[in-house]
Amino acid sequence: MKRRGWWSMALLAGCAALGWLYWPASTDAQAGPPDAGAAIDQAASLRGTSPDGAVRVDGAGALRVDQELRRLFDYYLATLGERTLPQIRAELQRHLQTRLPAKPLAQAMNLFDRYVAYRQSLAGMAVAASADLSQRLARARAVRLQYFSAAEVAGLFGDEDRYDAFTAQRLAILADPSLSAAEKQRRIALLERQLPPELRAAREEPVKHLALAEAEAALRQRGGGEQELYQLRASMVGQAAADRLSELDREQAAWRQRVNDFTRERAAILANGRLSAKQQQQAVAQLQAQRFSAQEALRLPGFVASH
Image 1: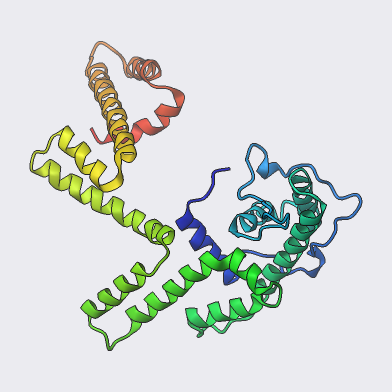
Image 2 (image 1 turned 90 degrees about the vertical axis):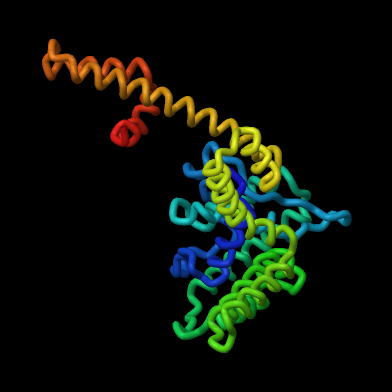
């Protein structure tokens, strides 16, 4: 399984904190130690994937409580519905037993049980529809302290809390009728500068690519060449990304050429009056099979229709 990007993780985590993700309300699905006969074969949906997240110990041999550990919990809990909680717990414990000594293993499983209870509590938490984001986040944070110590909260949710606080403040600024558009922009820019570097970079990533697309369009409009395009990309997104984009350009150009060649030859076949309609269809099908793989053929209709 691919590791999620920091930005998508922040958004997903924020939804989870508010209880917006599905969680069964049934009280008979408590975690706790698994039954002796609980199956621990890997869940079908996890086969062929690698666990997301990680588990580590500190210099004193104690469990390190951080966001990587929480991601590992969520990786296994994603199979809820496919597996019962006792089965998920058994599968997680089997994974951890090969990586942790007895003491941090016990700490990890205890923390997992509390994390499950926390998420179940959030799912059943009634929040007034009129409550704003700040109120809902404050309620979720209060619930956390019922299950975790302050240090555990910081380790599991610290980055998420910083992003959530930014989001709440940003929405408050945008909703303030006493502020001009320019003042709103200034205050939001100040908020963004206060974000941790990783969060700020992740937040800027989609904006950076939009800006790059606009800059590329302007460069091409004024007749800029490939070297100028590469230099523009390298200056905005780095040399490695510029190399990947250049390779993508070459692949797209080769694909367009293949489609153009196919379209031209297809038109010649359909214009051949010596062939019956059935023979034309057979010839076009044969041409397509020669030029494109079965996977590529799935993409072909949309490109051919545009010619």
